[in-house]
Image (cartoon, rainbow, N blue to C red; front, side, top):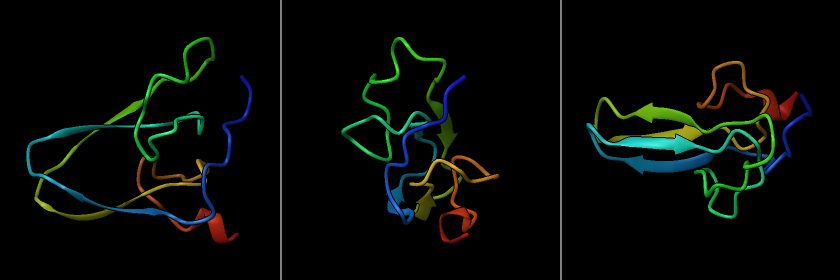
Length: 78
């Protein structure tokens, strides 16, 4: 498996809606970061679903190296 493309050097602050499922881009190739646009096709990557438990701002990982994917854990600054 190849490494994902580092899409950003910081997290994506995103307002999510309670009960809605979002599909986080794991490959880093999507043009609609932090969400999947199907660019992973032909790779070993697949989007990671995230179901919002509450309507609020969350921070999706942009560097694709987080240990708590799809959420940012600060790995971009290491």
